Every structure is written in C-alpha cells, then in structure tokens.
Length: 233
Image (cartoon, rainbow, N blue to C red; front, side, top):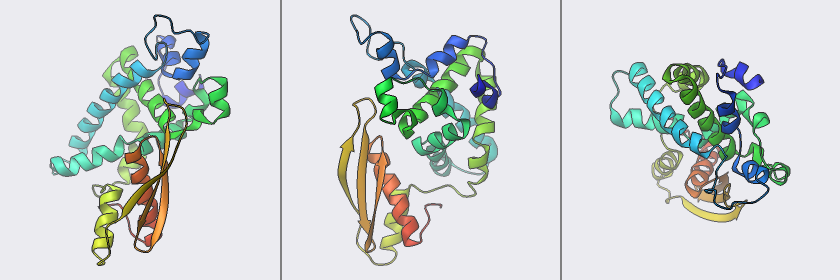
C-alpha cells in the first residue's frame, strides 16, 4: 500500500492498518446497517484512534523535552497543544494522502466526509495506534519525528492559542473583546461541522471545524491574519 511507503513502515499485521483506515460509516455499511448486539462503532478505527491519541501525546511530549530543554510546562504545553491539534493532524494527514486510503460509506464519500479535517485527523491517530500495536513505540516514534519535523522546525517560539492572541491584539489597541457566534452546524452526528463567526477590530471572519471550540480558534486565526496580527508567541 502506498500509505505504508509514505509512512516508512510496513505492517506485520496488515489487518491493523485496514482497521485504522475504516471509518465508522464504512464499518456500519459493511455490516449491512445491522447493529444487533455490536457496540457502537464496532469494526471502525475508533479503538485505534483512542490509543493513537495517547501514543502521539507521549511521543510528542518526549520530543519536546529533548528539543527545548530550557522551557517549562507552560511553554511546552502551548507547543504540545498546537502539534496535536486537529488542524495540525489534518495538515499532516493531507501530506500523507491519508484521505485517499480511508474507507467510508458511499453516501458519506459523496458528502465529502472522507476529506473532512476531523475525519482525516482521527484516521491519522488511528494509524499511529495501529503502528504501536503492530511494532511498538520505536516505529511510532520514527513516524512522529519524521512527519512532524516540518511543523516543529517552524515553531521558533511557543505558539499562542489564536483566541488568546486575537484578544491580546484588540485589547492592546484599546478595542473591545472579540465576539463569537455560532452561525451554523451541519453534518452527521459522528462528524459534525460547526461554523463560527468572530467579530473584532472592525472586521469579522468565519471558521469551520468539528467542534465549536476548534471552529472558534479557526475563526480567530483567520481574523488575526486579516487584521495583520499573528498567533505566534
């Protein structure tokens, strides 16, 4: 599989990778839409996503301690939050072409779910979980360090959360606090998409993500760029 080549890892147990790339909708479709006594999400990548999230957090914390020996918890925490965020995961998943390898139900594929940021981000975590179960921490560590190198190298200073950065930007210019408003929510229950608009500094911007908090951050980052600010610390 091309994805294995891009990861630089070949699975001893290919079924783990297949599971990691199976979206809940595809698992449900494969079962013929019959749940019966099966748990919700059975056969999908959700269990692997669960462990992959923990594997990524551990390996990224380890890497940050090595890369920034003089930084304390606050700065390291800001770096970690950015590096394991949905946006960063989706970016890396896009570089790996992970969406092309994901298995989703036909109707979900037509709706574009296969390329949704939260879906590919979850898929990437599931793949890391599968690598860990298949080969242990060593290959997972190698993948994390290779795939995140570009973003980590660009992180000269600990990044600020876009909402915090936007608030500091407008307050520093004697303007009022940003105002956030949820103006839309769409998509299936397992892959919702929220649209949030933020207004501040005489302008506004929108953000779309799988949670209100992430959509607010996306909107804040977009508005900050429009206003000429930056969310880097």
